[in-house]
Every structure is written in structure tokens, then in C-alpha cells.
Length: 348
Image 1 (cartoon, one colour):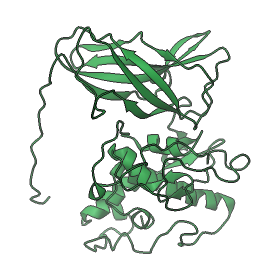
Image 2 (tube, one colour):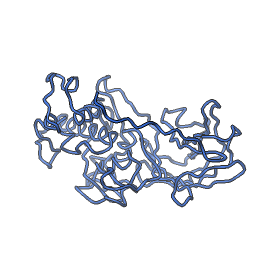
Image 3 (tube, one colour):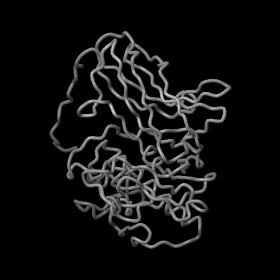
């Protein structure tokens, strides 16, 4: 709790803070497992004793044995407690902790650790296209998770927090594991509270960008009878490469609508080369021309990867439990949108 507010503060996106907490916990766990000693300098990871208690307005928890169970925490302390609550960590080669060093920010592409080929195969440089504008910069050694990049992915914005501007990106990640599996290659996330149980499947993927072919690069209103060609840049975040020896890999999608159900699309774009885990990403140009006849309204386009082998065809979401990437689509005309009421902060 003293590391997180010093390393990132509380103004970054909550999902990014949760990813940072997992990376920081793993980093300390790796050093403990190695029998090494770390200090609170930037040579390792920084923390200031009582940094948690000094978060504005300074408040000492009324439950010192379990600070996050206190009844008098301020809003910033609650943000930190929410981020550190899951005792998850990153593992490689079994349930051992990985050496999850991280950096402040990196422009366009992270870099590999000098010993990536031998000691740290998970510290591979990866494409980071969201960090190419607004406040993106090289800050730190540029290896592992980018703190500001993590917030950009969580916000779906090329600006790392609201105070730096607003440049919407074409994808937004809603789970901390998407961030971590992007920056660390071929790893798993485990739960220390449940016997180091593995929380991530072996086959995963992330969308890095979607080119919708519109002036603002937002999803267009789609109409029955029309054909839409989009390009999706995909990163293989699995623990395995995606080879072509007796296997085929494709990007596809499902259509869904509340009250109408869900249908699988037959439109699939297959890879033409082996796709290694981590980097580089692979671009799919996908045709969408099969909108179900559910009437004009809001639909959900659920992107999903497909593996085809001699044993059958397997959707990542259904077979391995890796969630689809969902995008709301208005079909056959503008959709009615209900704007939630904005409530003033009258206190607890």
C-alpha cells in the first residue's frame, strides 16, 4: 500500500492501478524468492513508509491490523485498497514469481531485457501503439509494463489521464490481466489466496487496434445488406505460439442482442504465417456482412479467436474461457441511448 501511491499516484485509471499492484507484488515476491534484499529507491521500486496514511487528506486507519478494513479511510486510500485487494501475482514456469520489472512510460514499443533469451523470456519487447501521441514519452528503462501505457489501455485513450488531454483510441481493455499479458509474454496470473490457483487460460489474445474505416475511427452505424471491411491488429498473448503445422488460427465474431440471443458468424480470416506469442502482432482484415434480422436497435459485436485442428473447431471464449472483445453496434439507424443521471457528491 506504500508502493502503489508512490509509483503511480491515484489519478491513473483504477484498472491500471490494479495491474501495477500485481506487478509490484510480483516484483517483491521474486526478490524474496531469490533471497535478495531490495530498498525503497528507484533502483528497485519506490515506497515511502506511511505514504498510504499521508494520502490527502491525511488519515490514519482506525484498524491498523487491517488498514483497508478501516471505517475512516479517505477517497484516495479507498482507491489504493481497491487496487491491492486481489492477492494476485504473475508466474512463469510453474507457480514461481516472474521478474516483473516495469517502467514509467515507453513510446511505441517496449524493449527486451538484455537476458530475455536466457533468464527472462517473458521480458520481450512488444508493440505498444496506444503510446504514440498525447503525453507518450520514453521514461525509464522501457522494459516490462509501462505505467502510463497501462492507464491508456484502461482508458481507451492515447492520453494517460484526463488532465493530459483526450485522444480516444479504437480499443479499451477492461481487465488488469489484459494489460499484464500484453506487457509480459507467456506468463500466467495466479491467486495467492487460493493455493496459487491459475487464473488465466493458456490461449489468449488482445486487440491492439481496430480500423473501422470511418473519419473518427468509431464503429459506424451498420445496415442490413451492406458490407463492412475492418482491420483488427491482434496480439497473441497465449503461452504458446500460433503455428501453422496442422493448425489454423482465425479472427471471427459473434452477434448478440439482449432478448434475442447470440449467433456465431461464419466469417473468419485465417493467419497465413506463424504468429509468435508476444510480438509482433498480426493484422486481420475482416468482412462483416451477416447482421442477424433482429430489427433496428443496439447489437453487440463480440470478437473472438478460433483454433481449427484435426480434432475440431474451438472458439477461445467457449473452449478456453478467454472473454470476447465486445463492441456496441447500432443497426439500421441511430440507437436510443439512456444517459445516466449525474449525482452530486453529498457525502456517504
